[in-house]
Length: 271
Ligand code: NDP
Image (cartoon, rainbow, N blue to C red; front, side, top):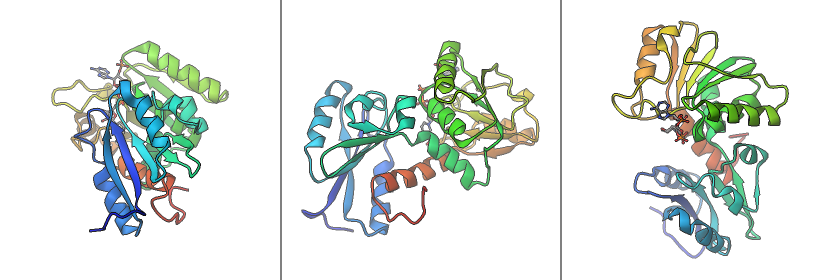
């Protein structure tokens, strides 16, 4: 165990509720492995108090930065002094670095983590066609990361069609040459099929897409981490598809967060 001293960099995770967060349990051992004098602790904050807390954090010279999760990922954008282009387009931030001068720099790593997790599994989405179920927070980040990564075309299917249309419009604005369509529950005709909804988290959830239309040459990927093998993945496996779990997204994202927050020596990791 490391000693916390007057030199220790402090990192936080902002959430409400916060009891379920797992990021400190992963980034504290990472900092220890890297020989970094830093500690990540929970900052439990309600939405109404977010701006007050963030103003205080700007003044905290020993702060290295913080991770942001539900329900603050959208509200934090306007509280940062600068955010990356992709975070601005997505409209959400999940990692904030505090510069020496107190400026807070925001980045959104959910989608990059998802694409990085695919790449780590040897699945290169470049020039591939992608079917994405969902248009919520995770799906937004993933859609932008896929288009940024150079997929050939994207089909977005969401229960609330207007949200899929809004996402497609924002993608088209940011990437005028990208081919983005609104889809139905039928994922056929796409190389990579992704569940970006929260369906699958709870037992008895409906399937996020029509699994009868899957075929063996398709890769089917999840954002849901628990259970590891969702009903969608079980059905896809039965159809002979290659499946990709939700966990690698998180693993890759932790690496990207650690790099962005300066928690480890960049050894070509995370770019
Ligand atoms: P949001 O609430 O922003 O979006 C939820 C999405 O699921 C929407 O597209 C919503 O459709 C859809 N949905 C929910 N219930 C139903 C239903 N009954 N029928 C059809 N569609 C439904 O959630 P997030 O995007 O933030 O999170 C989604 C999931 O992603 C989470 O469950 C989480 O587990 C996972 N996640 C995983 C990460 C990882 O590292 N692996 C990181 C971040 C998230 P509609 O728009 O119609 O409401």
